[in-house]
Amino acid sequence: MDVDIDHDTILGLPTGEDGANKLTDIKVSLGAREIFKLLPHSFVDPNKLPELFKMVNFRGKDVSQPARASNRVFQVYRCVVTCQDMVQNKDSTKSFDKADYYAHLERYNPIFHERIA
Image (cartoon, rainbow, N blue to C red; front, side, top):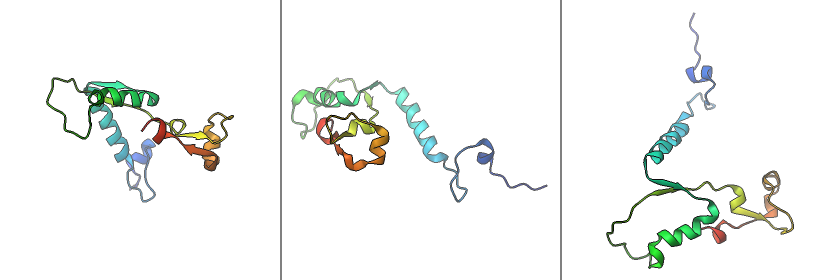
């Protein structure tokens, strides 16, 4: 008996409409996470990014100029930014509501560029 069943389908893994395997993004993400774990790293809250940028950014020096060689310890930072970090309700009396945000984008203003970036 010749049965044509995709191995990923049997395992319940995501596949595309055309039957193409959609694991590429998953594998890339997992690979990036593995490399990240090997590097010196820290986790940063989104509200701490401006402070971190000032601290790391040559301690207030002109960032348009190339940095001189130094004995600085380098590390990478991981920051998980959610929609709550990117927008706020136009009605300041209301707090952020994710379901409302997705249902009514027009009720929210972008804030990421002002508070974080």
